Each structure stands twice: as C-alpha cells, then as structure tokens.
Amino acid sequence: MSNAGGAALRPHAKTHKSPVVARWQIDRGAIGICCAKLGEAEVFVDAGITDIRLPYPINPVHAPRVIALMKRAAISIIVDHPAVALGWSDALREAGCTLDVLVKVDVGFHRCGIDPDRGAIEFIQTVAGMKGLRLRGLLSHAGHAYRASSAEELRAIADREAEMLAGLKARAAASGVPLDEVSVGATPTFRFSATAPAVTELRPGNYVYFDRTQVTLGSASLDDCALTVLATVVSKPSAERIILDCGSKTLSSDLAPHVAGYGVVLTRDGSAIDDSLSIDRLSEEHATVGVRGGTALEPGDRVRVLPNHSCVVSNLVDDVQLVEGDRVVDTLRVAARGKTQ
Image (tube, rainbow, N blue to C red):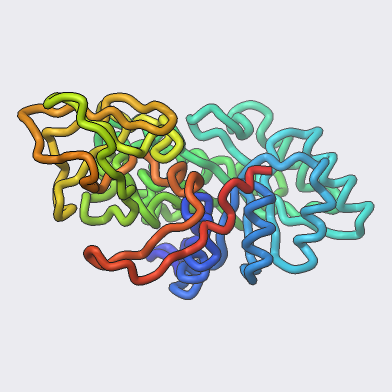
C-alpha cells in the first residue's frame, strides 16, 4: 500500500500486539510492521510475519537475538549513537551478516535521535562506512504532535518534519552518502505526512484502534474508535459518585491532551459521550466517576469506556473481543502483550 507520492505503509504493531491484526494489515497492503521491542518482534516472526522494523534504540547486547531473527525475517533497526552503531557493526561483522539500519533523527520531540543540525552528516557518514551495517535512510517520530492544539499546528509539525528530513537527506547525498528511505511515524500527523513528497514510509500505530486522545486531536471521530473497555458499576456511594471496575490496571494512568479525566463513559448505544459522567480518579482496581445531574446506573450495570490511550490498554489485557452490537463474534489473543524486553 502506498500514498499518491509512493510512500509505503508500515504500521506499528505495539498498539494491537496481535499477529492476526498484523496479518490483516499486510493483506490489505502494508509492506510489513514495526515493533517496539525484540520480544514483540519474536512473537510476530514466530507467527509468520517476515518484514519487521524496530524504530527503537536496541542495544548491541541483544545482537544474538537480532541475528537469530534475521535468519527468518527481514529485520531493520535504528541507530542514533556512534558507540551503539559501532557495537552493532562489530557484532554483525563477527557473525558474517549485514543488518539494515536507519539513522533516527530528532525532529522536535527531543527524546531519541540525532540533532539534524549538529554533527548529523558526520554521523551518517560514519554509519555508512561501517561494515556489517547497510544504511537505508532516515527515520523520525514527531511525538510532540500529541501536544498540538489545532489541525493547523499538526500540519505545521508534519511539514517541518518532512522538511528537516528532506534537507538532511539532500545534505547526505551531497556528502557522498545517498539515502533511499525517509520514514515517519505518528498517527496525529499521518493525514498530513501522507502527502509529503519526501516521505517514503509511514508508520502510524494508534490508527488501528484510535482513542480519546486522537478524537481530541481531531485525528479521528468517535465513530472511528474501535477499542472500548466494557466496565461494570461495582458501587454507588452517593448520587454524585459511582465506582467502575476499570482502574489503572485497565485504563492506565495516561491523560489525554487538553482534556481532563482518565477516559470517557459512552452512552448506552455507544454513539456519544455521556457528559454527565467524568472519570476523575483511578486506583489500581477502581475508577471513581463523578456524576453531574444524576444517573440511572446502579451496581451491576455495564458501560463502555473510551480510553485515553488504546496502546497501553491493549498491553494490559490478554484478549480483545470483536463485537457487532452486543454480540461477540470472535476473540483475539494479544499475543505480544508484556513483551517489553
């Protein structure tokens, strides 16, 4: 699958952690998937997924695991530190293998990645000259897009990301290092990055489910959201407060940008947010819900909660159920949950 500019889709599987869903994505045109950790990649390779990119700084101490995966699938990783890159070079030369790598670039999130304006070309040249490594291109994650407050700001972040990477790619080519790939990945900026001529690969992950955060950012509508938590009212201490059984071990403690609360309760038919209820506080096993104007909900009643962050919720459960209305049509194992090593 590619966009009008020819960019390939490589979804990040850390959201769903399901080989079944990954196969659906590939069957519909994705060229492969991304995984955050080697434990995830091992699960997907065992399930027959044969093209996996790890846009995460994997340390060379894990070289034996990567080399083992390379015998069964196309594996690529990122590097952003000279000592780490050298460690991978040494390990791959010793094993007689060549590993595809991309240079991670910091485009404004200030987490991982090289500074594109300070020593970037020297680093790219160094990696390009390392035996055992095949430098494929540049990769970034505009994580700061999650703090955007408008579509215009999201577009500006996506445009700036593409501009920075295109500029660095041109400078690398001028220095004698041609690069084939420019890979970007973030669901909030996806709709803007998809039209950027410089981009060759798109790596959204959250889009497979969406969540309250994406609705807040304008990346999705409520109807687009595919993952909800089915919760039970376990207590009603007063007319102003009910308690659900979905605490931080279910919803996580992640907040959404620009809004309060730990998710939202949906109306019975799931078509809207119940504005009379607010998930104000989480304990490990309890969600404390404030009630404004009264509620007919009583202990034993069930509600659907749209979480702030579906990726984390997915990692907290063993299975997800596929439903049509109130009917469960299938159950999928979250096979890579907890695979964080």
